[in-house]
Length: 112
Image 1 (cartoon, rainbow, N blue to C red):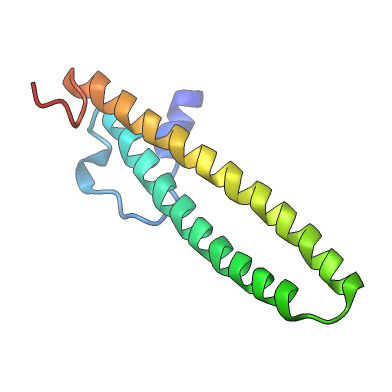
Image 2 (spheres, helix red, strand yellow):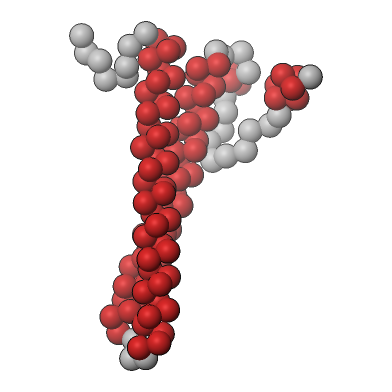
C-alpha cells in the first residue's frame, strides 16, 4: 500500500522532473531529488546571508544598546541556522556521491 502511495506522489521542488523519471532506477531518483534539495538549500542560504549582512549593518550603526543586544541575539540565531544549512549541504553532497557510486560503480570524479 505504501509503495503504491509513494509511486503516485507528486514531487515538489525547484527542478522539473523529466518524463523518464518514473522509469529510472531508485538511485537516479535519489540523486535527482538530492540535487533538487541542494538547490533549495543554496537558495535559502543565500537569502539568510543577505539577512546576516543587514543585521551586521544594523548592529554597527544603531544607537540603542538594548536594540543592539537584541540584534546580536538574532545574529547568533542566524549563525546557528547558517551552520545547520552548511551541514545539510555537506550531507546532501555525500548522498549524491553515494547514489552516483551505487548507480555507476564509481564516483563522479574518479578518473581511473
